[in-house]
Structures are given as C-alpha cells and as structure tokens.
Image (tube, rainbow, N blue to C red):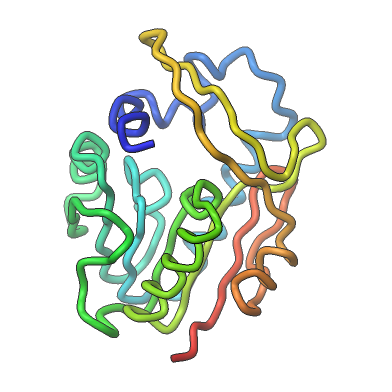
Length: 199
C-alpha cells in the first residue's frame, strides 16, 4: 500500500479530476459530487485539524483553521506542501500518530479509513481519540457495481499494478462503526461522518 501511494502521487488527483486513466470512466454525477464534497469540507468549523493520509492535499486545502497534514509518502507531501504553503506537514505513519495527547481539536481523514483492515481500524480510531476529541471520516459511498469490501487491482500510468483493499460505506453504518456520530454529507459517491471521541 505504501509503495502504491508513493508511486501514484503525481497522478493521484487524476481520480478526483476525471482525467488521464479516469477520463473514459462512466461516473454519472461525479464532478458535481466532488464539488459538493469540497463544499462540505469547507463548511466545517475552523479548528486545529490533523489531516491523516492527506495525500496531495486535494481535500486538505478546504479545511479551515490551523491544519497539519500527515502522510507516509514524501512525494504526496511535496505536492501538498506546494498546494498549501500555510499548512504544516509531517511524514509519518498513522499508527501510531507522532503527536502528544490532545494536540488537536479534530482528526480528519479522506479515503484512508476504507483501506484499513479490522485491527488497523480499531488502532487508528484509538489514536485519533488520543490526539483529538473529534474524528471526521470521508470515504467512498456504497456503489451498485462494487461489493462493500473487496480487493482491487489498481493500474498506474506507468503500467505498474497493485492490489488494494477497499471498503464502501453507507453513512449511517459508518457512523455506527465509529461509535456513533452524525452524517455530515451523504451522496452517490462520497460519505462524510463526524464522530465525537470521548476519552
């Protein structure tokens, strides 16, 4: 997974933008859904936010307040740093998080939680609980053409292929899984759930 995302960094935004290998995909309403997601992220109250697995900063740039982006890929962070020079960035793994207890008001993560297996999910939520009182998860909505849980082959522009574990979510189910929370956004392509993390 780490090698996949580091290799994919220069073309990661193609997925959001619907260009490159994604230009010919049939994704009805995709561009409108991406805009709605960006607006939902921008509407979050300003906070000291840690964006875990921030990637290229595609969603990070819409977070308001003091933002720290964390990613394990140096190539991803280089792109994010150029895109959001006012933010801070840390290259590190998400489990464990390299921060003291209660360092942030919010942990935000986009399209990361759905790649974690059961043990990793529990460990990540525990780490989020340790560093912030709120966790916001953005991920892919349940789709009729995908199982809720599957292994996918991802092929990059250079022809390299990687197997990736991926989950798709119903927003209400995700809120329950996170221990209860509120649905911030739910559409055909994306869900966003906010969970208060009591200590």
